[in-house]
Amino acid sequence: MIRSSRRLWIPIACLVVLALSSGAASAANKTKVDQATRRVEQGAKQIGQGKVGPGFKEMFTGIGHTVFEGAKFSGKTMDEFFKKSFGS
Image (tube, helix red, strand yellow):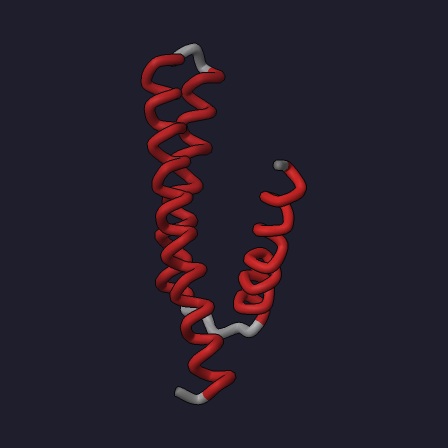
């Protein structure tokens, strides 16, 4: 089961790397990903300061936003890459 899921992620990862390396992504989309990543960091810092409840809430909310915004960013980047590459 682990092998089959790994085989599924390899082509996806290759496409993402290819799309991101094309330089087609705009900086405006990446700022949302960076903001969500900062929420994860802030939550982790709160946990380190002893504020476990609010820290976990902030951290896991940030993780959710990071995944969501990262997926949107990757999708837009791959879309721009394929439009440039195949001229549709």
